[in-house]
Image 1 (cartoon, rainbow, N blue to C red):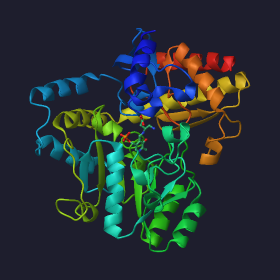
Image 2: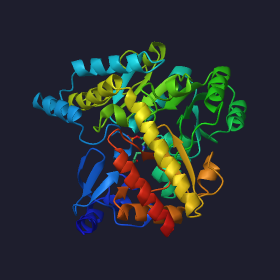
Image 3: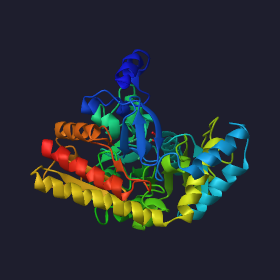
Image 4: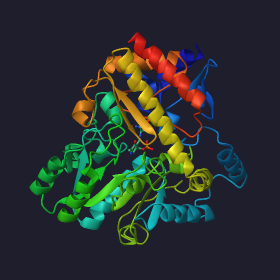
Amino acid sequence: MQSQELYNRAVKVMPGGVNSPVRAYLSVHMCPRFITRADGPYIWDEDGKRYIDYVCSWGPMILGHNHPVIRETVEQAVKDGLSFGAPTRREVEMAELMTEIVPNIEMVRMVNSGTEAVMSAIRLARGATGRDKIIKFAGCYHGHSDCLLVNAGSSALAGGHPSSAGVPVDIVKHTLTAQYNDLASVETLLRANPGQVACVIVEPVAANMGVVGPAPGFLEGLRRLCDESGALLIFDEVITGFRLALGGAQSYYGVRADLVTFGKIIGGGMPVGAYAGSRKLMEQVAPCGPVYQAGTLSGNPVAMAAGLAQLRYLQAHPEVYDAIEKSASFLAQRMKASAQKHDVDVSVNQVGSVLSPFFVPNGVDSYKTATGSDLQKYARYFAGMLDRGVALAPAQFEAMFVSAAHTQADLEATAQAVDDSFADL
Ligand code: KE4
């Protein structure tokens, strides 16, 4: 197998043979598939095998892979040069488009990843409030900056290091951990640290412990607690931004955040992140304020071209959101039916166009219940699906992403693969 040969070479020259841990397939005990190309809902591996793809590059490919509008825009942009290190028209257009579409933001700063966006938003929250402590939630993942690698989700959790080595205690002593969907745990931390908490940062829909949606009133409660305590509310919308709805989780749930972070979809597949908020807050960022943040390739013209093409397409075709939510709902329903038919303990969470099956019987609404999932069963399910030509997240604590390119035939084939894989569990 070509992937195996490449993997054998890769592990000699890259940690784990990959440039991001989840790609190593360690949670599913298999050789990772090396991908050569993608188109629409499909990816192909080095051995020419085609898969219906529900990783979607971990969220960016909401329109499917290799969308002609995005590809042609990027091909055109490349002809004008790759990077100037100077302001460009596209950056203005991107910031104008995002502030036009996303509620409650007046200014945006582009960066190169979700990690950078969150790291910068935390620094801004600390600079703006003069407070050091932050509250995050166990199982939520906000990228790999030091102060957020505490009880983190995603591959930090799957890999057994939810709190990373190499992060000084002096840094993480300011990071307080609450429980997702448990307002009392937040209130307790705020009461115990009066006037010291700069921000509460949350994934409005947790998607890095598997998908766990906010309980009714949870996000509204966070807004109230932040207003009462003077802490800023940060919505980490690296996944939910332009995914749940055009306006992201703020518009999907009608709850206002003080700062919002973005990534993935806004880059159209290219490396892009952003953080955004009110003028009052954002004007505290260099060069007009004392909170420093910079980046050589921030607002890169080619990346902006890809992101603008995708966001403009989504703005012009809002029907995409209903369509992908219906597709995800179809898959969720068929998963539940197959679990019942084959007497497999599975709880399926679906919010908008993201979903996760958990191998537990009684529902998942928290970090505790999510981490109760039978991970070996997930690994066997993953292997069964991969064997049947369906590529899923190679770890339980991730999300399944549906794109506008997945046709009804792809969904039916996926549902059949689920049924056959559940039968084999
Ligand atoms: P990046 O630095 O990976 O672009 O974004 C970090 C990040 C921030 N916030 C949220 C809510 C995120 O989900 C992420 C990154 N997501 C993971 C998938 N769980 C990226 C995949 C990976 O780590 O390889």
